[in-house]
Length: 438
Image (cartoon, rainbow, N blue to C red; front, side):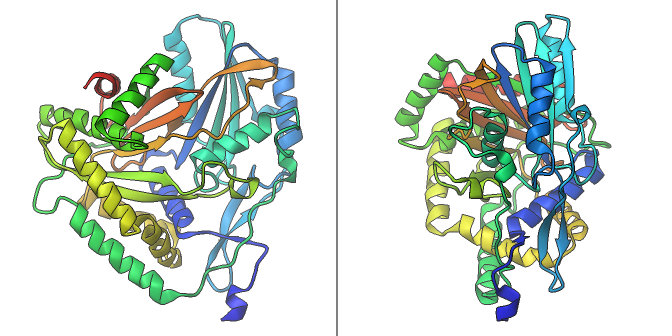
């Protein structure tokens, strides 16, 4: 047993990493798009194409994070194998939008967000979109290798050409760890705890609210909503008054749940809502050694149909405290290690069956701490940053809040086969209104 668990130079995937790998395959079968996300970084100016592509070529050629894939060791534990390949300038997409129509800009950004990677081993991709006197660097990243905050930190290191605050990305190495083929009793106990938790939190015996089934996924669409600094201060004030200190995520979740409850009722599919929430398990600041792979876990909330917003806040706060007290995020991380024995395709199949049998209303996340802090990129001020995730086919709609430079951003993601684009835009606007004035 010691030989199985001795220190390795490999990065053996965690259970959460393996779930993300399975979700990637499941999504590709259903939608043609894997489990990835896009960061949109807005600059107050337009860098030239040569500076952009030269920087990427110098950073990404032969690095350990441009390409890679999972493999199994002889003892069957999955590990990550980096593939060091040169980066070609032609791999970076550059586009100039001659029109000054904001709608055309949003169309291009959304189109790139749903663009698959060049191949199954490519983990990141870059685009430069130049529009009037502004530009947008689009950074797509595969969740098999990076989560949202890790991707922000990596993007900062890639674009930081001063060398003062960050090491050069070419010096980065993937973290090494053991296969964790031990402590099976605790893994199974965590699995039992999670099974009991899921049975308790899911609205059994009642119809759960969710998007209706459709013949096909359709096209991935997004709705982006920005908050001004004044509106963000209002959100902070509302949170403190109505939910309490450090309860921004609870306040936003409760606001979204209030809007979705009315939406499902209007569509004739009312019911209690089950909402999965991912949470970053890093500290406020983290080192380069914690950039890669998924440093997240999960909470799940049960929000009752017909509840007022104040009741949603009270219920969500209580559930949050209880789940933290019961160490549910730790049990998720521990129990999912057992899932690594299943091939990713089979695990994805059963995850899809489970989510269809016990549907979620929407997925939700809130990242209150940004990990990208560069004030200038290529000599131009950084004006804004937001995330545009590919929502899993189940539940088919997601609500994602991030903060950047004292401003809140909201992005909603959904599939046109499940929800119309106009409904998505309307929902996003209603959520913002509820956050500020509800």
